[in-house]
Image (cartoon, rainbow, N blue to C red; front, side, top):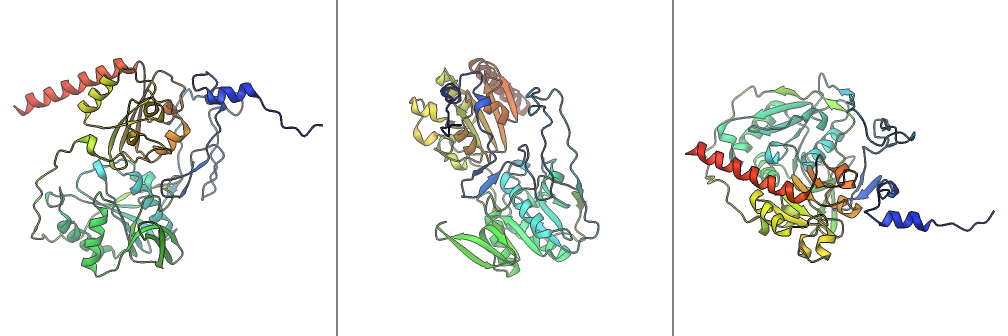
Length: 406
């Protein structure tokens, strides 16, 4: 038998042609990829993936047996329940909760807390004010403490430090974990460390045994130090919890939180031009691709929504958007709370760039494209008609709000 490797030119052409009906079937399944911080991320939902608890992901769609590639009915997977009846110690986590929900950074932090807690400790999440999150159990929270009150609303770091000190006095956590972010966790963690007299470990991206490793030298060097009690962790510090569900039992403080005389007055949020927000920091991105035919309507919709504009590489190469607006592995890695993809088929480089986005909405004519598979919400139809309807809905909502205010 000949050792010559035979190539299939037709299969290679189909793999390159995104408009071919068999294009999606020719794409390799991505099991792992490198994140923006150089950490290898694994596809925990991929078929055949074996997690740390020995649970193997199986294919229930029938695709491996030649069946239909889509499920006809939603299958609810019941994850095993992780219970800690009498915790030997606590690992406290203070998530940012931007928009009232857990971000990807918060989930990474809970994954690190679960790693430190092991089987004997419990993860205690401390949340300030009202929230909209309903998935604390699957994110790895064993105990949930909500510090609700007018004194904690808005920008009140001094009062929040008082609340954390009350939690520290009652539960005496073995470790405190806060996100080293610009959304509030970085500042709150440093203020809290000063109040406790602790030296925090900052920009931590990895914990090994009794040692934590943080970024130093403008992110070009690693600094190893003994495991600190107060850790300010960076994004991708650990894999988020994905194989267990936790009790998320509500707990309360036994004493009231002392009121601090605030030296800071919160004057509210300041309106910012969405176009002036860097892509890497934007919370709401409205991105266009090759399927957008009316770019004037696209810009009008982005302005009506108050979103930061982005684009795929095809749209940038065609001159419709500036190069600094390109999203993807070859452009900018984004971590938006909401990412709306209009007319973007979903090349692998683009999907890598939006891997850390919390919610992805796809508007596309092709129900079988990769972006539709990635999206949390999909709208199938002509983009121009959908954008016009979206503008009309936003205007109607704002007009109703003005009438109610009057």
